[in-house]
Image (tube, rainbow over all chains, first blue to last red; front, side, top):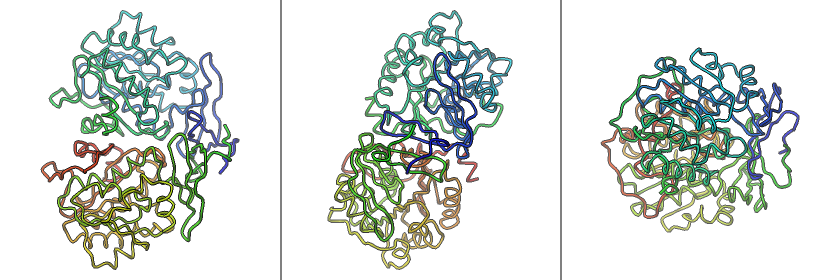
Length: 283
Length: 283
């Protein structure tokens, strides 16, 4: 069945599969120095953010991705005062992070100001946290920022796009080492590590490199369904030299000030349970 | 980006979203009394089965759906000797069920012989279990079979299509009551209950009706990612008057004779953990 190009947006993945949404309006369509930025309004999934032709989020299910990037670490490791978010220019991860009253500062390092501008205007619920007085937005290269900063962080969240173009360096060992350095031995980092089903190579390589950098039992993948991403089954990897989320004896933080929709601490053991084929990939 | 109709197959869901695969060959394309049956060969996900324009399975990820329909119950409740599968003409659920040496008989009640014929010919790995001597295939209406049979079963698996056309009756109370009857108070049934994300109405109605029929704490939804289904996040519901999979003290069966790829008993608590928004839907 053909889809009318005038009101359907289609992301083609590796020229082999495609996901499409029918839209009622194209709200934003500009090119930055880094990528094309588009926002559509749809009946099915609310507004959608597209970068370089790829789905970044939909209003319907963005809560799954952003909560899963932020809450498992935030509700588990103690004393998260200083947060660094690399990428994530839509502001969704920031919005989840500032729900915690104990968070004192959030730095968002997003390379592309056009993403932040577009999301502030057209995705106000998702980007709302950017206006929190604890948040500072820096527009620059995330890998260079982490390499050069003198600051230390309790939690680093890597909310990257796929490992091509500007985000490629965010999947490489020098970046992982820099993140480990700014955690100062006590903090934790969470990396989005792609789909174990449709991007098996990137997923396994990322987790294995993170284990080389942080330690073999110090990088723990966890999982959620992200409907608009290729393969649907998505991974995040929690890394810490000090905290092990698979040990049940560890500390639990208080919950966020505002209610969550996807993750609460009762789900911790569940989200860190890998299907058999994923365990074999990483063995 | 337009997709060439000559080598892309697209499923449009509710005229709002669409999932597409590029195919190298159309292997089968016939109409039965009930539906159109198509099988394509693709580079991305192997062969795919399409019924009435909807993805039923792909060779790449069918193991997730079939294992999740069969193994959580089979590895949990004791003494599963007599199995009934409603729908599931592709044979994938049968193939998982006959991996267990303690299973003595499997009846597959599939309304459409053309599905079985097409899958035997073009999806031999998935349909392999149909040749097991313990298996009997009946072509007929699943709801009528369960209503009229004098037999009793230890495990009933309802591997239905969406609740339209021939499968509509498989989402209604009279069918649920018939399934309860043939379990004789001691067995268990598993129903595929659609996506809590993209088919919230069908999901919540199904689980609530199953709870009315089997008892409020006797119908337990569980979850997996099925990449080719709308919404990706998919549900199954385990029902039993006797066995509660959320109680950790219950029996564990031996594993299957052949290795699994998705589910083992270590994942039981994980797959039954519902995200917060799903718990609220069912509250």
